Length: 173
Image (cartoon, rainbow, N blue to C red; front, side, top):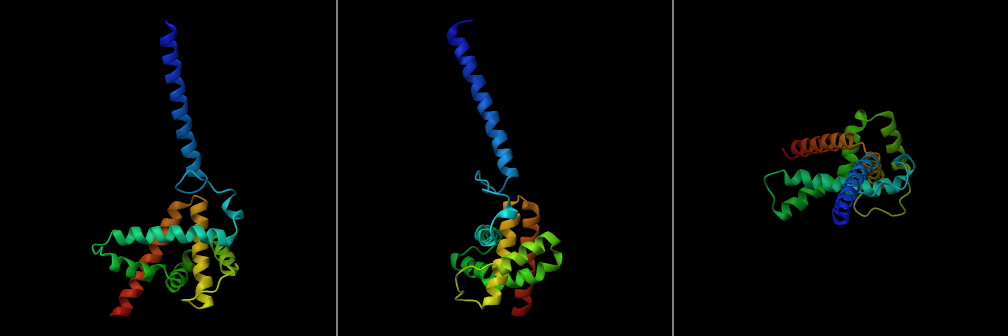
């Protein structure tokens, strides 16, 4: 076999091995955290509650936006007002209250830690109790996201949105 053919074959073998390694790395990333190839620096249980709330806030916001895009009315102003009704501290506090009975013992522990966490900021559009409950809800979402419990996270977010929409519909009648 010529040297050129050997180089081509060895190059394709190396590329195949590299592609296989990328697949393995992607599978590991899926097991270790979120949707992107940046796994948490430590297990979710060891991440501070405020940091979990930080990522939970973003993940919940994306979930709400995706939910709203699934609806028929997509005017920007309507989307923003609808999102605000689901993402505000008041709404998140109500959602947490409505899903608390569904939470496992581990999830209740995460919520308790999130509720007791000191954020260092003072809410401007919510009272302190609502803000603490909203932080606890975001902490729960962040924990589920960071610990790769995505199915459970989606289940609880879906239930929370459904209950919030029902409550909103019953108060507007």
